[in-house]
Length: 144
Image (cartoon, rainbow, N blue to C red; front, side, top):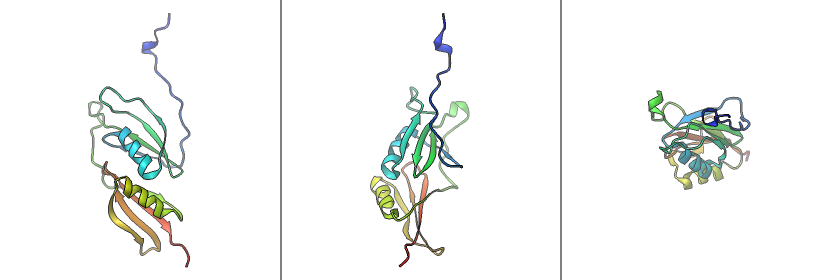
């Protein structure tokens, strides 16, 4: 007789998109995934079920053609929550940057730097999401 209670559960691994994948530790990974769906059109492709405290160790999203991974803090396993700092999630967009910007702001992102033409010639702006993560959007200026 096999005791399945001690066997590891395996899950299908969705395809990882992109050559470099950001893996963010946030306070409320499943809530962040829901927010990123509203703000950035993220598609949830996988998550481990929440534990008894509502935390999950892994969420996999597709955002703008790339994978984004999320996890909650697990201080009891050496991974305490740390505030986001020192990085910006950069979305490289095309003609639809205004729609992306509006959707993110309408969802609840705070404008840090308004969307404008920057000295390097592209339209760029920076937002902060409710989880403390900085997001920027960049698109080439349309020729006149």
